[in-house]
Image (cartoon, rainbow, N blue to C red; front, side):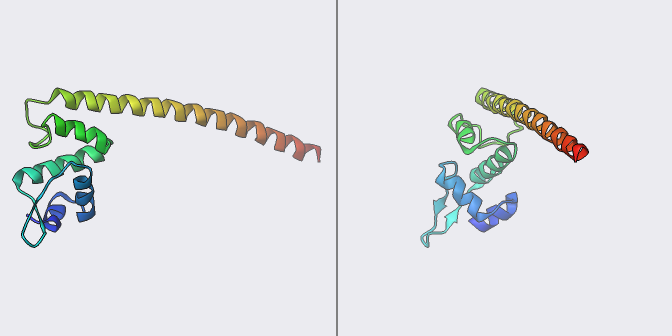
Length: 127
C-alpha cells in the first residue's frame, strides 16, 4: 500500500505519515522509484499511532509502545503490554497536574476580575 492509500485507509494524511516516519515510529520500504510502501503490519501500526495520538499521547509516549512491540497488533488485542498501561497512566497524571494548575490560574483570574469589577462599580456610583 502506498502512502496516499494508507492515509486514506486510516483517515489521516500523507504528511502525518511522513511525520511518524521522521519520529521513528514507521519504517516503510521503498520501491525502486522511491515511493513508500507499507505492508500489513505498517497499516496496523499507523492506525495505532493515530489512535494513541488522538487519545492525547505524545510521539515520545507512542515510541515507548513501539519499544515494547505493542503497536504491531490491534490495541484491543490481548495480552496487553504492561508498558501501555504505565505510559497512559503517566500521561493521565501529567494532564491532571496541568488541569489543577489551570484551575488555580482560573480562580486567581476570576478573583482579580471580580475585584476590578467591584472597583469599577464603586467609581460609577461615586460619579
